[in-house]
Every structure is written in C-alpha cells, then in structure tokens.
Image (cartoon, rainbow, N blue to C red; front, side, top):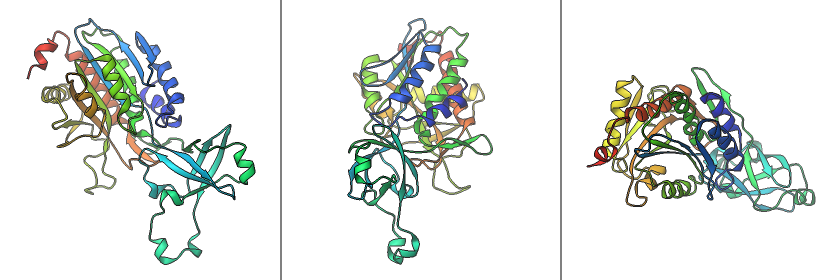
Length: 348
C-alpha cells in the first residue's frame, strides 16, 4: 500500500479524539508490516519501532485523531442536538450528511430553515452549533431505541480526487502525516540506520496534545520531529495562508524548534532536491512539537508540516506531492545521521 492509498484509507475511516480505535487498527496493521515492533499503548497511541544500531532515539509524531460530534440531547420530535469534540468550523456544518454511531450505524442530515422563511437578519448569521439539529427520519421513541446521549456523530464523507494530484476529504489534519510514514518505510527498506526510529500515530491531539505527551514520556527520545498540517492559501495570491499547495514540505522555525534540527532539515532538503518552504512560528505552535519539547528533561524537537486548505472542515484539501516530500525529507534525515554523533550534534 503506497502513501496515497494509505491516506485515502485513513481519511475514510473513523478516528474522532478518544474514539480512534478503527483508524488505530488500520495503522497498527500497516506498522506491523514495516516495523520490528508495533503496538497500541495504554493511551491509544500506535507506536512502531524500526530498530537501528542503537546510537540514539528519534521519534516521529503525527496525530491520527480527528474532530467530531456527539449527541447532546434528543428532543420530543426525535431530532438530535449536537456538541463537538475538538474545534469544528460550525459555519460549515448545515446541510451535511452524518453517521450516528449508536447501537447500530444510522444516517442523518443536519437541516436548517429554508431561506424562504428565514428573516433577512437571520440569513446573514452563521448558525450556532447548539441550534443545529440532526434529522434521522425517526420519531423520538424509535430513535431512542438506537441512539443515546453521548453517541458519536461523524461526517459522512469519502475522499475525492481533484486535479494536479490534490485530494479533498475529512481529517487530512493529520492523517496526511501518518500516510507520509509509508514513504519513509519505502526509503529505508534496504538501509541499515544508526538511529532507533519510533513512528508514533498519536491520539487525542485535537483535545489537548495528549497522546504525544504520553508517547514521549514512554519513549524518552533524544530527538523528535512532529508532523502536521499547515495553513495553505485557499486562493491564488490571497493572504489567508502561509504557503502554497504543491510547493513542498514546510520546515518550521521558532522558539518551539531546536535550531540545529531546523538547520539540519533545511540542509537535508537542499542536498536532496526536496521542495520546501520555511515557515515562522514565533510563539507556541499548538502541535505535538509543543508538548514533546518540554517532556522530561527536554527533547530536541523539530516541526515539519504540509500545506492544507480549508482546515477543520470536511473538505480539507492537500497535494500528494507535499505528502511525498514530507516522507522523503524524514527518510533522508535518518540516512544523514549515520556516523553522526548524536550527543555532539545536540550540544548547543
């Protein structure tokens, strides 16, 4: 299974924060084919170890969870009220098809009042999440036999392919980074590396960077690279994002980033002709890098991202060229560390 096939499979699966089991099992099966050891830990992270010569530990962290919805209440007409897990852009939710994960899966739609009977003032406003209702077609008695308060609700969305190697679908944030591992595995297939490499698909990032914290505490890496999505420009020339799709992996710099790791990644990209864009993050990055950096006595941490349009919607759009570039950069970074003294490299 190549990176594109892996990405589509991951995106189409369910993996809401705290409920990642379906997606985690897919990742675990994939890791078992390419790693010396793979497991789902007590927190729900999937961790694969590709053993090297034991000359240092390098941890990659890409979160596998996605934002989602839950049933908050059931009214007397059988409509389902919603609350959210993570940060949905609620403006995009009306008119979506959803799946309610009750005693069995049932389908519903998020309906809104027709424009014909909506006041001009209300028509200009986005509808708050607490005012959105899911219509399953069931009445109150029927729906309560299947659905309970607290049941998971997900957007019914499958990946679609656009032109120029673009893909659109739900939770590209951050399954594109998990999918980039496929490129790394292929790159290292016949290579003996000095570093022990830990591939982490972290859980519950969207609700507080939780999985990366527990994984880093368990692994205690010497170095770590967090993998994420970045803000891609959604219109040519528009100043609403940092970078352009198709222009390569984003290498992030700032106080959350180890300076030597940043420089090494830039040099690796240049040496191997990997398209890249430098992104400045002057404050906290809000990614797994933020929490890994301050784990234990501190971890030398870097962050690379791939530009993504329409983040936290069900049509997040990415370019496979950037995903491939991310994987190539990780692979070449590992190869470049052979015969390198990790302790010496990490001295500031």
